[in-house]
Image 1 (cartoon, rainbow over the protein chains, first blue to last red):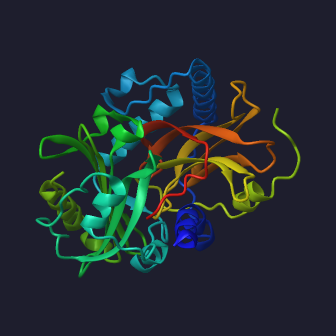
Image 2: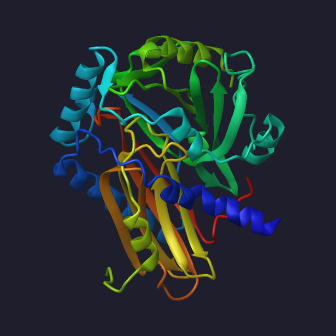
Length: 255
Length: 130
């Protein structure tokens, strides 16, 4: 059993490195050097503060959701301009992606671990009940994989990723994380929130590639959990309907 | 403080880095200490199973247990990767590893849509059952 545990833990980080050398599509908009310098500076500063707290024997790491107008974001101009460009692109509807920029459902399936845990097992592994999806369109779908997500706190992962095969649609992946427990700070920009899930502001996006594949995403954060739903389909011509399906799933989730 | 001596594990990983589809990454963060016969100390910010690229940074600070002054801090920062790695296999003694993780989630066009941060720490390999 011990060897299996070690194997599973290492595979969670190292296997994708080996599996995905075949995908080589660079992002269209590389980050500005100014943004990278800012990221590095923040990381180093936070590291120093962390060391100071450690020396004092006090560590406070509380998770937090921050929703702010873009203008109030403490970031360099290049980062803010990137957000603004994204908002402008989203306002035009479905995004266009280059051929092979969106993986096929077979490629996505190839990345998934074959570990499948029941809700009862997940309750044990996570220390809380995972979101209830039985009344959603993926409630009866084939569960392909369950993998840990978030981070490890007190010996347990704080979240889970569940992947489903939905006939005539493709692959749908639900990620949830107890970001409060993991001490994660999430900052969302008000202007990017273009949808809502049962009253919670959400961010939705859909894209279609030149070679006919589609990808839709939905992101929302409740006071306790963060959620991301991602859909991959080989029939990109109907990605708008698939996007509506994601919203329907999100609205049916109970946590 | 950063040494130039060859680091086989990070080099192996950097050789196999790749770009994938930009999307709303749900970022994972982990630190490990005294791992794999007690020599691997590392902090990693990554996304899986979807391997979505994001802009990120990770700092891994290594401190010998019982001390408050760190041996050193290692940093990785960049864009368009699904995995950021800071670690080594050369530190003496038994360590505590503290990681600070920052990331900018990007949309399918590579534009920033979200920011996140988290601190992790470890005094062991962080092996958990799954």
